[in-house]
Image (cartoon, rainbow, N blue to C red):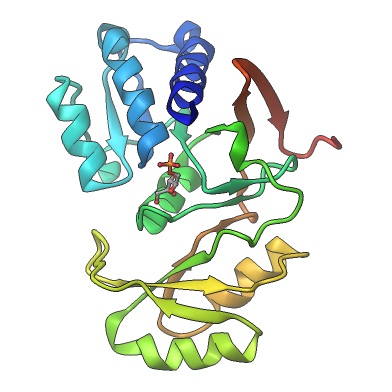
Length: 226
Ligand code: 5RP
């Protein structure tokens, strides 16, 4: 059922951006099963835009399989849209991302994009972030130090065994965080030396959160009091 909801929201996202697409436009595309549903939809519209920037090697490969040109972000100076999924989302468009270990590239592409559209099935909506363990990308030699620092702020870090990110780093998943102030926590974790970034998207939230529940699409806008 979740798969069906992901397909519905992927189609809704394509319907949302379709009127804005043009032959010179490059769009950002995220990572994960929901983003994959979006790529599958996007293939049918590939004649309407120039190409895409991918937030992971896996996404680049899927886009290329459909014949969608993939650009290095450094060669693109305008990214009107970035479409990606999330592991958790609030009505304020704050997110936890990185379940697929692509958080750093996702955060970079989101930073560049004019409009970050987050798409997810309704099960991802939460009142407070933190039930899903918060992923942190860490430089390998700093793993133990960073883990000790994270314990000091009340987290229970767990090394994600066997996972190396596209950037050659490791992931620590943080359990038992009570995330009442996501902006502050995002900044605090990112200040630990050896942390590349963490999976909180609160300093730069999604601009638009689109959720599908029982075949209905619900939209939330950042900054909107819900
Ligand atoms: C990958 C991500 C994904 O967006 C997140 O894990 C959601 O994935 P899915 O759409 O498969 O539920 O952040 O790093």
